[in-house]
Length: 194
Image 1 (spheres, rainbow, N blue to C red):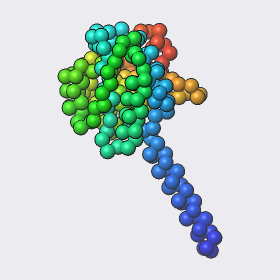
Image 2 (image 1 turned 90 degrees about the horizontal axis):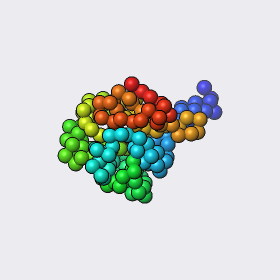
Image 3 (image 1 turned 90 degrees about the vertical axis):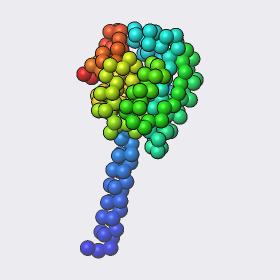
Image 4 (image 1 turned 60 degrees about the vertical axis):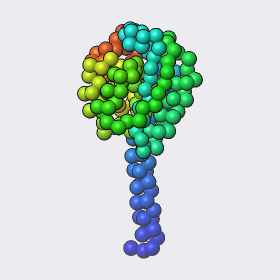
């Protein structure tokens, strides 16, 4: 093999490795910009008939971040900033709190003790989704995903882009388990998972 061929093979291998690395690091990136996600959440939450009772006059939003995960910390900071620019969620005033994830059990306990109405997951939770789904069964809270792939795994609401337009994702079975009662008029506009 001559030097030119050898260099070409090394260059091709390096490029292939970089492409795979970029795709892997992007695996949990949000497909809909954070600002638009928050706008959609603020509107869609008003279609949850159980939100007023759950919120008791003020929506408490937990933005859950995975400590040590740069993407999660970046997204959670953006989520809180955009939430604070939003006056109402589901037609109600709101408070926003960053919750640093430690364990699934601690998060579920925090949701109950802090009376969160909405739990918004930043990226970084792919490996925890099965346990989170089980922990939130029977918990009266709207879980929201910043990453579209979390919804088929059991987070109730999420956002994706289809043909360059935002699309709402909804896990109907988990919604029932978490006492979320979205009106049928908005569910018809969503991609539904069971």
